[in-house]
Length: 125
Image (cartoon, rainbow, N blue to C red; front, side):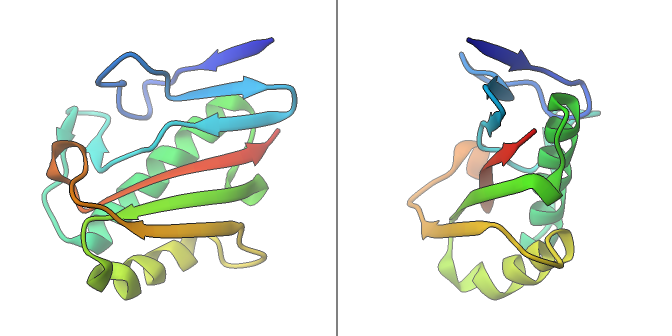
């Protein structure tokens, strides 16, 4: 059995998917990009600003599901340019200061809406 998670504190899905799904005691989020949930527009700015907004959006979705960033088990980070890794990593460390989750980071050819970073996660409730 699965429960759909939706919050207006994160961007609305731009296709046939949900912000997150809860199955058992796990939360699976959709990949989040740097869309401001108040305007539904892509945030102008560099990798630091975009990473910060992506993680805030994930935080809002996890909160709506009954979880939080401290309960994240695994993240996957998709970067438009691997040269942005050090800057993304510095912002990421602000959100996961202790006992960070497992993580994969990959460079991709293109991301939705031509953003610089997309992050998804799996967390426990």
